[in-house]
Image: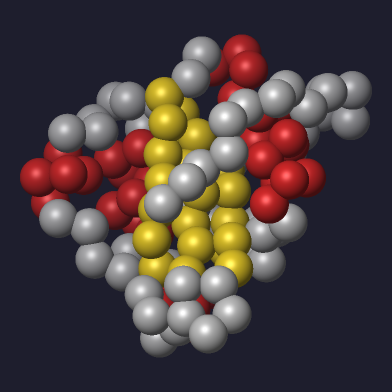
Length: 112
């Protein structure tokens, strides 16, 4: 996975949701999460060994969207339910566990 430095720098201090996927023979959503700083999270992701395993499957791609902080956990729960990503947890920074009382919040599905 290679994201241009200018693209990463433009997301400094921008919080929101992100979703990784690969195309390959069997396209698949890999991981869905949220962060306070998309720039730092995406830079870290480029060296993540779990994501690197998927890179040989026609590359790893990322979709991202800004959203309000108080809705992020619920929106990620919704996207995980809808997309069924292959990986549930990645060590990409300060990703928090969802409170068991958190309800999914509908969010538009990523498209390519």
